[in-house]
Structures are given as structure tokens and as C-alpha cells.
Length: 463
Image: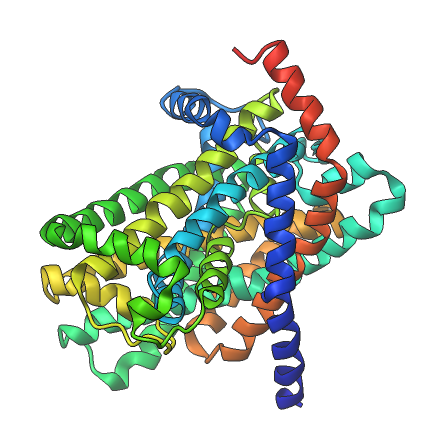
């Protein structure tokens, strides 16, 4: 039975995350960019000025809402995760250094896609029975496209609920336990025989912490993410910059390999990566997987923002993709490529390749800091996806089921810490990709609304 499920899921997964899906995501991103006159490029300085300015503005959100900065931190909490560490390494190993160039291309279009998702989420959001602001793809489908498209909103929410337990929780907890286990074993602080007990303890502790945050509502989620996300991002960027500075002489060669390898990967990888299409596929897919532009999930957090200007909050979508992919993913790539650690092109690689880049510069002691960074990344992802799952199940049923859902979601952490998750990860990844289909349809059909909102914003109160 499990073999059958695995075979079916593998076929669906290869299609969902294959060429057709990438064409759809890139195609919709390009379509939206053209319709908005490439707002992510044209208004990029304004977007950075607007978002940075609001980050440092002290403001308390109204009841049932987050501040705009807390909303973007919650969205970043879910997107900045192990994909930024392991995903980039995998893209380079299979697609060559040129995959990073295509990751940048996907991010450039993804900025516009995320901008549109956030703008629509804030524009079409509602208040639930508790007085909380709720929104996201299911609500802009429902309120923007009308009753005839209700089934599409239900489909998105159903895929969302099925995704969160695997992608958002179990696999992330597994990453935390693996990072802690590796760090402790490298310093001989524990024995192999104690790992099972340690992982159970960690699973219970993480379940308690997740429940404590999620059951506190959107305001507690916002308070936690606004402190955790800047800390983990800054820690990681500082460590990465150190590796790059120590190997600064390799920077010109690295950038040459990225740009030249994007179109001629054979010359860079010694013939192992034979076509530029493979390099493009890996770069685009890993970029999408990292920043989630096109999946619509991040807009669920942004819909909680205490703001009356959808377009202004939309600029945080541009900022979010920029930080996640252009900054953090690029840092990871430079750590791997500048450090000169051996890369077995054509073979799968993960976080171990990124960690090797750090340890080559700092020594084994840095494994403690990389473990802390990975734990922060993974824990923040669990919190962010917990909110997404709660909103999806609330849309399908009612606010009464959100607390029981959060309790069950928290307890899944124990499973994630103690069992093998190969099939769980694969199935969750498939449902994750399936979420993009209804969202992309809605973005395409509501593109006219986005154009109108942008024109009204800059014509009236944009400045």
C-alpha cells in the first residue's frame, strides 16, 4: 500500500513541481509584471523606503490584528526556513552555479506575484467572529470572484490543511532535532544510544512552545516573529559575510561561474550538468520553493496587518521576496561557492554542503551556531505555517475548530522528532504545490483589480 502511495505521489509531484508548474508560475509572474508595468522594478526604491520606514515606526496594532512589520515577519517566518540552507545547496549540486542566476530571475518576477497576493489579501479580507482580520487566497477568491468560484477557494484551503502538518511542522521539527543531534555528537556531549530519548524530549518541548505561541492568537504570533525573524536573519547574514570576506579573492570567479554557468553549465561543472535547462529548472523551482511567491500562503499573514492601504502593505511582499531570495539565498550560495568546498555535481546535496562551507572558514565550533540558525529557521516556519493552517481550516469550517486544530498541530511536533519522514515530506510537498493552482488562477482573473488599486493608490494617497 505504501509503495503504491509513494509511486502515485512521485508521479504527481514530478508534474506539480516540473516544467508545466514552473511555466505557469513564471508565466503568471510575467503577466502580472507586464500589467503593472514591472512595479517591482519601477517602484523598488519606493518599496524599500516605504517598508524600511514602517519597520522602525513604533506602533501598537488594534485588537485582532498585527502591525505591518509583525505581518511581514510572520510571513518571512514561514518562508525563511531550511530551504534557504538546504534548498540552495541542492540547486547548486544538481543545476550547477548557474542555477543561482535563474533563482534571481524567478525572484524578480516573484516580487510582483507576492506584491499582488498581499494587495488582494488586504483588499478582500474580512473580520471573523473573534474580531480578527482574516484573509488570503481563499478570501480574495470568495470576495473577488464571487460565488461561482467558491469551489476554488475550498480547494485552496483543503490543500493548505493537508500541507501544514508535513511541510510546516513535522519536517521542520525533524530538521531541528537533526541539527541539535549533529552539534552535540560532534563535541561528544551525548552518545548515539541517547538520541532516541533526546529527540522525544525535544519533540515534547517544541510541541509545548508551538502551542504556547499559537494559542495566544495573532498578536502573540506577531510579537514572537518580530523578535525571532530579525535575530535569525542577522545571525545568519553575519556568519555568511564572514565566510565571504575570508574568501574575498574567489568572489570574481564565483560570479563568473554563476552568470556563465546559467547558459553554459557544462563548462563550469565539467560536463556533469549537461543542459542550461536543468540549471534553469533547479534555480527556478528552488527559488519558488524558498519565497513561496505564487503559492499565496504569505498573503494570509499580511491580511492580519493593521493597515487601510492594501497597496502599501503589498510593497512588503516585494521586500519579503527580496530578503528571502536575493539576500539570504544568495548568501548561502556565496558561502558554498566562495569557500571552495568540494561539490559533487549531479548528486543530491543538502544542508551538509552549506555547513561544510561555514566550517571550512571557522572550524567545527561554528556547527553550534549553524545549529542555532537552523533551529530558529525551522521553529519560525512552524509558527508561520500554524497560522496558515488555522486560517484554512477556519475558512472550511468555523472559528470554533481553530483551537483544537492548533493543539493537534502542536502535538505533531512529537511525531516529527521521533520518526522517519521520507514519505510524509514528499506528500506534503505535493499538496504544497497543488495550492499554487487555485491561487494562480485567481491572480490571473483579478489582475484588473490589482491594476485599478495601484492606480488609485498613486493617484490619491500614495505619497
